[in-house]
Length: 156
Image (cartoon, rainbow, N blue to C red; front, side):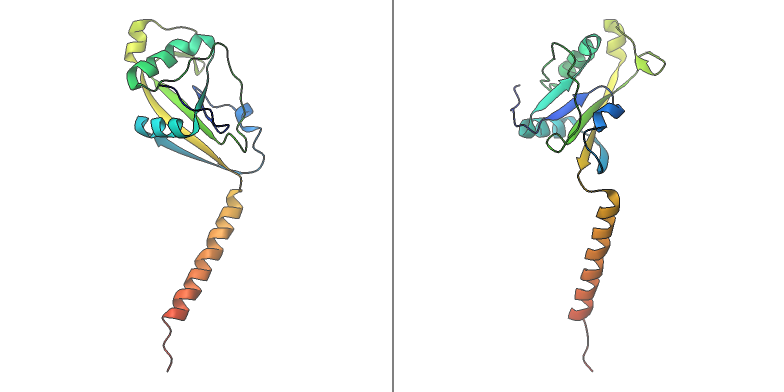
């Protein structure tokens, strides 16, 4: 499966780090668990860039085999930052693999990979800060209430 190059690709990684977030400035990040079908549509629309260390490539291959995502395996680690153009990050959560100090190990056997399960979490960056979004929502709610009040008034 080949995904388009759009200039607004979705980043895919096995972890989330603060350095990925330094390119966005002030804003709001939403987080949601997503399905494989959703990811396929998202990648088909926006394209995808995978960031994985060389030792993580077997895990990415396993995800491809299990879910037919068609993720292109990078030759070397691609460092990225979320930005105005690249607002989406999908983190592949891995369960069932042994870790050291919270980090994945440098390698796993095929049997260990067989025991792994995966979930996908999408992070999306909005350029507006949460406080701005809340204030805008309150203003819209007030205007709606005024409109309803005007339309349902009774002239006596």
